[in-house]
Length: 125
Image (tube, rainbow, N blue to C red; front, side, top):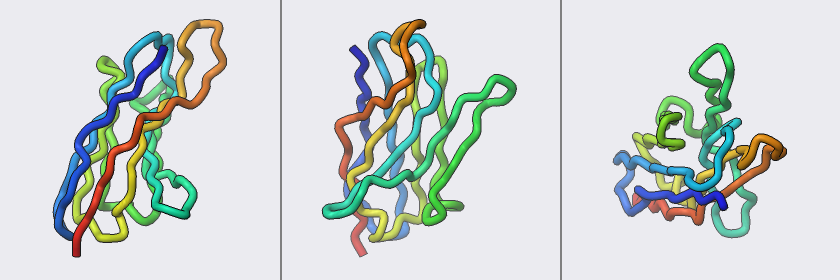
């Protein structure tokens, strides 16, 4: 069984900061990517940021245009963890944030998506 446990959401005023954390546990052979998505009522879940593992570097990062320059994603491979530092938060960043990992539980597994339970981020104006 693989579990993703998130923490760090909450209520903050516009212009403030929050840091989200997510740790993967259980049977993990390898992790292809870890990242954060968010969702608001009536809308599809959207990518916020992700880090894709590479052989030759520390990983490739991707950000949604709306968060570039404000959010920073980082990974701790030793802890199977991913973090999202969110600065200069705006009311439109209000959403449920979900941790995602694309991983192989066993050496013979095909990589698949795993999701955390979600953590609420609310930014007041």
